[in-house]
Every structure is written in structure tokens, then in C-alpha cells.
Length: 384
Image 1 (tube, helix red, strand yellow):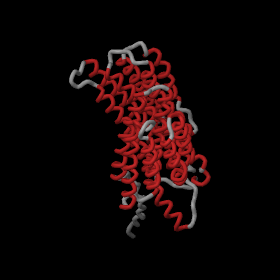
Image 2 (image 1 turned 60 degrees about the vertical axis):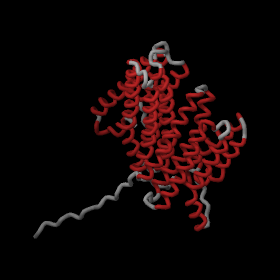
Image 3 (image 1 turned 135 degrees about the vertical axis):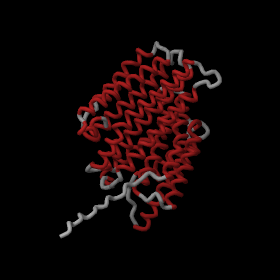
């Protein structure tokens, strides 16, 4: 008798990031660049708070859009129209960022509210048809935090900052407060983790641009050339820390999580806010370092450069614990070394500070590669 051929089991096609989503992401390159400029203008404690408060709504708009793109068919023309409408709102938010605490505060608030309305329009229509109004983060942004940003844009000084800060905290906390109603949602792990990885890539790319454009092309010195190279290698180190091991760990944890919302909420939404904030701080420090590599960095700027790197590395301690209940000893140790190295680097020229920071990242990446080589069967778990 002829041998029976076993049935072919077809695997479900994995959702891919669409061209419209990639186009949408380009808008947020401008937003990240504008936030970096705000920090460069005022890198005091209050200045950092102001930058975080205007960045959080833009980031949350991107998060909400990316989650919806994960749950819906991105090839449909109607969703693409929505995507472009949200991108237009993000353009005006980015345009308003440098003057958000002065004369463009109302524009910033209106743009955010418009983006949230466009994003949530489909859900509202579905709710009207079904005669139900489920409470979710999209509805909260439409009816509460969006109007709060508009009202804040009409206020002056500290009142605007306080109201916008309350709105940002409200937006960020809604997935946690509404966990009970959202925990049954299912996400495509590959697509969603790739989306957040792309935002990290946007931030690193902005850091490369910040370093490259800070060199004086008309009178490029040898020291500036070395500083550009050191800054680029530092960015390569940041890329390696995230994409060589951690990106796969995040994908694995989301795909295998019993409650995917917990990974989406803690690791992707909250963890990546820390990752991107750290990279933005680094980019501000790189700009000053490349501009004057032979001079000592201002203590505040050095704090941004080293503090941003420490924040970036320490955030992996949080995400790894959230994913696997394991301690990321290598990255937490590297974050501590960065903090200890700051006072040592302060008296040195900016170029030396860059080399020291880049060397710490290089050593970290080598150590992790050696550890993974010895424990390859568990490599997904090591560096998340």
C-alpha cells in the first residue's frame, strides 16, 4: 500500500507592520526631536518635568494607535484614513511642543483631543450600534483627559503644568485602573512588540542625528570627528542592549503570558516610556559633547547623559521582573556603574565622558553574550 502523506498543518500568518504604520511613525520623529529641544533649553528639574508632561500625551496617542492597529485590519482604507488623521494631530502637537507652555498651549490641547476623537470614533460607533458604552482608556481620553489638556491650554504658568500633569497621570494609569475590564484582550505578540521596538529605534535615530548635526561641518576638528564616532558607538551600544536580546524576550513573554494585558501595560507601555525617556536625555548630552568635545560638560548636561543611560539600563530591571520575575543583575549592575562613573567623568573633557560611557555599554554587551553562550537554552530569559 502507498504510504499515507501526513496532513499539512497551516500556521496562521503573523501580522506584519504595514507601510501606513511606518509612515505614521515618521511623525513622532519630529515629536521626539522637539522634546529634546525643550530639555536642551531648560534642563533643570522643572524643565525635565515640563518636557515629560508634554511628551506623555504624544507617547500615549502613539501607544493607543499602535494597540488599535494590532487589533484591527490595517489594510482597510477607513483605518488608514484614521491613521493619517491621528498623524495630522500629532504633527500639530509636535509643532506646539516648544511653545506649549507659552502661546501654543491651546493648539497642543486641541490637537491631542482631535487625535483621541479620531482614534476612538470607531469604538463610539460600535458602542452606539450595540447600545453599550464600555469604559476603556480610549473613552477616558476622549471625554476626560483631552478636555483637560484644552482647559490647561487656557491657563497660565504653574496651573497649566499641574492640570496637564494630572491629565498625563490619568491617561497612563487607566490600563491599570481598568485592568479587570481589559484583561481578556488578545494581542498579536510579534506585531505589537515590533511596533514598540520601532519607537525605540526612532529615539536612537534621533540621538544619532543630534550628535551628527552638532559637529561644525565647516570647521570640523579632529576632536569633533572622534566625538561623533564615540557618540555613534554609544548609540550602537544602546541598540545592542535592546535589540540583541531584550526584544526577543519581550516578544516571548507577550506570546506566552496568561494575561497579555499585564505585559502590554507594564513592559510595553510603561517600560518603553522609561526606555525612550532615557534615550532622549542621552541625545541632549550627546549634542553638547560633540559640539565642544575638548571642554568639560556642564554638570547638569553630564547628569542628563549619564542619568539617561542609567535610566535606560535600570528600566530593564523593571521589565525583566514584570516578564519573568527574575532580577536583571547585569543591567542593574551596569546602571549602578554608570551612576558611580558620573563624578569621575565630570572633571574630564566631554570626549572622555563619551568614551567612558560607551565602554561601560560595550563591556555589558560582551558579558551578556558570554553568559548567553554558556546558557543558550535559556537565552530568551537572560537579558529581558
